[in-house]
Image (cartoon, rainbow, N blue to C red; front, side, top):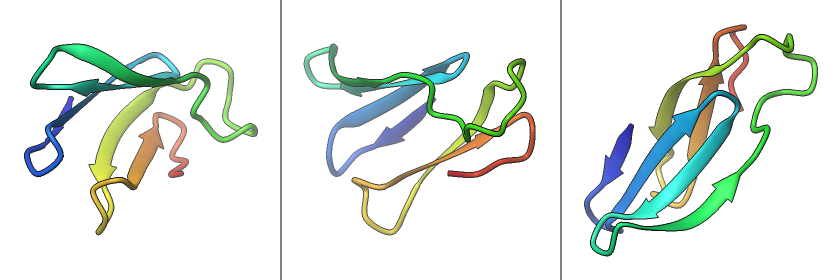
Length: 68
């Protein structure tokens, strides 16, 4: 889970998907399915999240070692 106070965004993961939430309302803003590198093994899952320099950028790392 990742929180960005300046935008009020909360980001969660489940398997290979990422959901961006509005922390103020509790509603999902956007869902991103199958966020992993296409060459990642089928069993790979998202294990790390990090905002970029711009809080609208999200870096995603997986159990296979890929970062997007």
